[in-house]
Amino acid sequence: MKCLATFDTTHMALMFENICRTAGYASRVIPVPREVSASCGLACSYPCGDEDAIRKLAGDRNIDVAGYYKFPE
Image (cartoon, rainbow, N blue to C red):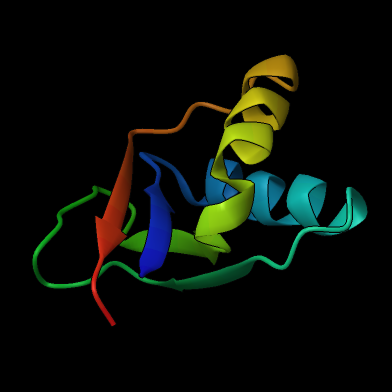
């Protein structure tokens, strides 16, 4: 399973990646997959097993996530 967060701005995508990495979670900015649309065109992938902690972290840091998605690999 592949987990992604999408964003309305590039700034939020980069902040999300940074806070995840700083907290020790693997995160990487990637282009938004064709199945999903986001105005900035960027998403962040992250480990699905860490999703609850990552969602809480993003909320605590006021990161505006447009949506969370799961895709089979």
